[in-house]
Amino acid sequence: MNILWIIVSYLIGSIPFALIVGKLFKNIDVREFGSGNLGGTNAIRVLGPKLGIPAGVLDISKAFVVVLLARLGVIDFEFSPLYLGVIASVGHCYPIFANFKGGKAVSTSIGTMLAFSPVIALISAAIAFAVIKVTKYVSVGSTAFGSVIIISFLITGNKTAILPSVLLLLFIMFRHIPNYKRLFSGTESKAKL
Image (cartoon, rainbow, N blue to C red; front, side, top):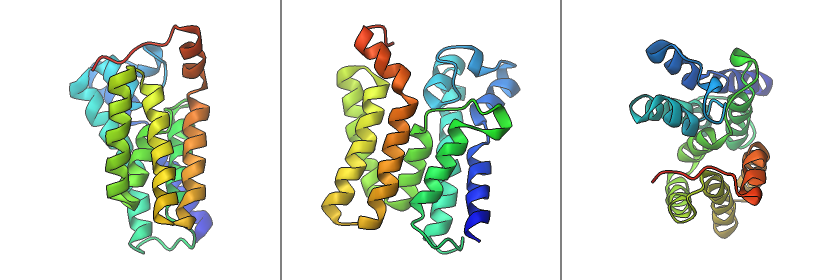
């Protein structure tokens, strides 16, 4: 059953909500504008908050659903539910339904943590938002989000959650390498908050 749920999690993660919303309501492919990815930040930038925010929330829900069902025992998965969130994030970043060109794992990481540990997720998100507010860079805030999650699990002693959390952070960082390069070169776009 583990393999089945890994495949299901990947397929759910692969649903390109930003692409679907953009095509349905504005007849555009969001990957052709802004940063060129299917993440929530680019969806908001290209589609505007009224369409971009719902698209981002739907992206969050992809990982949230599979992790919550695994945590509640509805899904028979013998490892930490967080791993299904990691798999959903892989689907989000490399969606089979959108030519493997997706987002940057932030929204699905948020969904993963909201389902697994809402308190830690909300604390991490608040810190990440504060970091974005101060630095004006979403990539820095996204990295802070993943880092705080790991620190939180280290503090609480939840050892089974540490490895998948590290994988999520590494995945977020890997997907943001172009942003880091632009940061160092001084060409990264600042968030308007």
